[in-house]
Image (cartoon, rainbow, N blue to C red; front, side):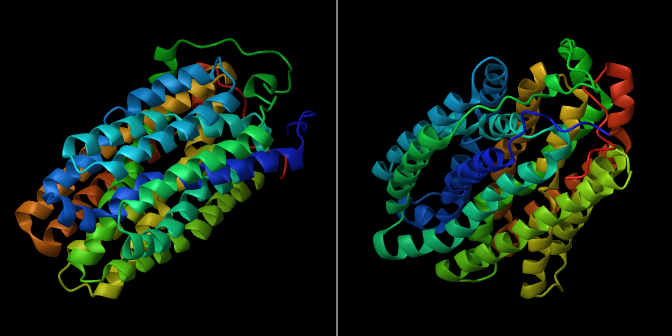
Length: 431
């Protein structure tokens, strides 16, 4: 059982987590706005499904590279300033989307936004970890991660209404204002924590020396976490870009109706994600190994999510059941976003944690490059709902396979013995 960290300030730490919650909300509204505007943008700008898939995919073209660079920078630069710069950049890059009708400009704007958002989640996790000791990290990371869900919920309700009254371009002006507003809040209330994994090594106050990155990145637990995150990101990329269009063109709902259904699906996912993270932390506190409570548990939920997507191929499935299947997949697959970083932090020295988290996020983001384009191909060539169902089913197959392989690979306790991780978190101090 680890001793409480003397630098832990619960009220201040949770204040930072709350600001990061808002940060993730803005981040995911930025990500999903194009998906929610798919139909009006395609109609107004005369875009084919494949061209729109290209716009959706372009966000992720340099996302991964920016994420890796940002992660290495976060090892040496204060996360407070990095988060501030990113938020301001997000606001600036919304404006060309509102002002232009050129496909090239839309793509360039999304590429630049992807660069600015690439490091956002790993840097936010790294920033949060500086405020919470290791045995208390599951829940705050999960909680602030749900800012993403709340952002999607607000987007699902608000963006169709804004579009209905002021047109689709008004959404990008509003997002530019919101990004600046968050930056002002962070400038006033943000701060840099002092707790690091390097300060909490196995009951000692000493700093753990860095490990060769080849040794870290070829570890089976690290690779298993990367794989789980990648297949989970397939789900995220498809739903962000194509779910609203599927609800309208595949299932026949109106723009307003599809936004509300989208919001309901997201609303179900927010408490579900917090619940599964709490279950994992409860398993740890009752003596379960990290391999079981974090690794196998995450893999099982990814397999269930994949099977839910695969069920959409059934022609006998009624509309309501299709919505339930999508909600199940969207609710369960994000578990790796909170449990994955916790496992990576177990086997990674604190001085290298930011870089490894960024590499993890960047590898996962490659799913966002291909998934929207692949779905656009199926929609354009198979036509109607069949194209959407094929795209979701292919994603589901990959999620099932990835979950099964990762369940075998992930073993943080073994990795800590073989590569020399930070400490054993399998017996944490109860939160």
